[in-house]
Length: 357
View 1 (cartoon, rainbow, N blue to C red):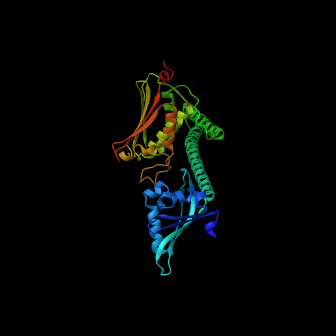
View 2 (view 1 turned 90 degrees about the vertical axis):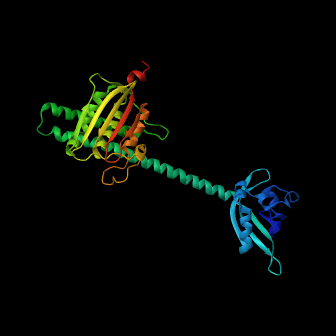
View 3 (view 1 turned 135 degrees about the vertical axis):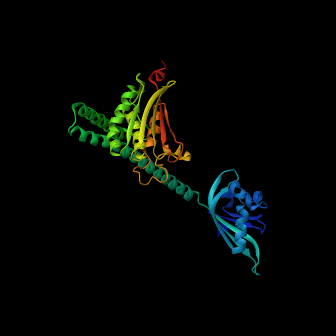
């Protein structure tokens, strides 16, 4: 008999939802003795959030209309705790088939609910880890691809009929870009989830870094029919930066400008000092960026609509933002609008500011 069960709570209700009977495991599950709870509204057994949504009244209404109402939800104990219950509310009929009250039978299934939540949380963790792995792989593949094109272009030029100075410059490109690949592979092998990107900071001259970055992309610019312009001050601009990471940032910014500038266009690279900050500006007269997307372009896997024919998955600018922040700097995008060109501004601390000099 359920009324004598130590597993099932049996609660009798009047038509208005007042508790009139308290049997079986009701006292064990809810903590109320019969004398305390009989005469109280059915809603007292519900969590406040369910009361606010009128769930007790809706449950009674459904049972009145259909003869039966089932639910699985958290219920409130007398001590303020809660338990997860599976319940069935039946309309009690007299001999004339008229409703005279309700009987609610409930069973504690907190164990099943906790297992369900544990499995759900595990699924969410696995999905999050998979997403991170996908992002890491996409970023690694993107950054590995960046130095390969300059290596191939430089090798082709170096093995062609060029003067010794050009050959040496191309060999330097090959060495530098190979070192970038070596660094990427080493970082990929050493990385742990709890560790961020490591920087190997050293003094360097920004003009030299920009010249190297332009050497690497010049063949692509020529192939695209674009004109590269470099405007630099004569006094050296000295940074405290990671050379390979700086090349990554410049390669991504330059590659982005080349991709979105039509044949015959211009890409201008300039640098200067503003206060205690070194500033690199990369201007193009290409497709431009809608004002609503000036911040979003730095989010991973984000690209503007209408660029399906342009290669890429929206990784490069996200990498630039992350690396700039690791250096204590930042990057921003500027554009008057679609079709009006773009400017990307990279700002990094000067060496003197970083050392407090």
